[in-house]
Length: 407
Figure (cartoon, rainbow, N blue to C red):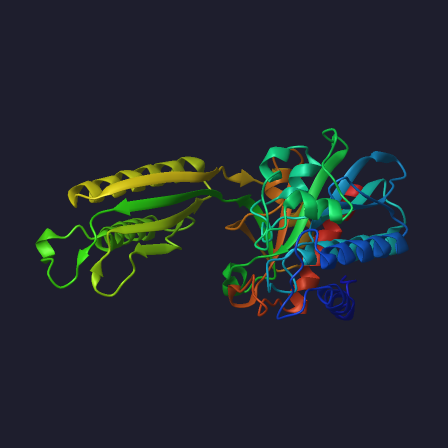
């Protein structure tokens, strides 16, 4: 039986989305006035539900309904409150609003749970104001390093530490202990088009991909575009092109779930009549299997070096991100799948090609993720949208999973 009503969802999404900077879409950056207002209003919303509500030192917000039998054991849900600049109305905040509705309906239906139920509105995930991501969830487990943010600033020169202090928050004095967290489930939009293409309303995530990101610099020789014969050129755009085509062809031959992206390319001097003597570019490579990711990127690195050497061009390869794939908990996956079957929800088991707070939780707490479709796969964009009927199925999957775990 479906309990969640479309008007509940639409009103909550409209309410929270309106707490935003002026402009298109939703902009709510870490420690901004809009962020402070949103967290404060969510605190009031949680308190109205009878929750015990508190902020931690850095601004993560926790609302808890104490369990009657084992209150020290916590079944949690939630997501992040921050957005990208001019983002959509669902990324991050759907997991908070959906968790709120799921717990609200469970309390109305069943009263207090046996184990404690908790919703977490995490301070930050996106890295959209400052060059640091997962500040919220990393602080929950005491793995955020003060040194990493001590000297960083936003595009306007505002230092991270100053913004945090001005918002009324500070660094954690001691590492928190979250041995009381027994399970965590995050509801999120897919941010891809798999579910829409498959005609499914719920995605049960079994793994979050590992990622390797590179910055690569090729150096050849800038020269006159008219007088330098083709056979004498050390053209770094040609070298980049060979590298990109070679890598993409091999990635396509291997197929899903491997993905490879050359997302940023900067030729120098970037002038119409000069052979480009330098090109810097980025590489983003992802896979759900660590060995497969390692094997492909090792081959990619060797291919890049070979192509550069053959063309008499120097190459510098900087691997600056190397995140391992993160599997979700098998018992949580089975729980979500069971409630989908029992409630005739239209679901698919899938992996996540994007990073989420759940990947910080998963190595430390039994963790699962539930996706709902993104129309045309659009996200981080004001056009981001999910049909309310699909959101209802996602919240129902979350609600019934929390019920099995906490009641």
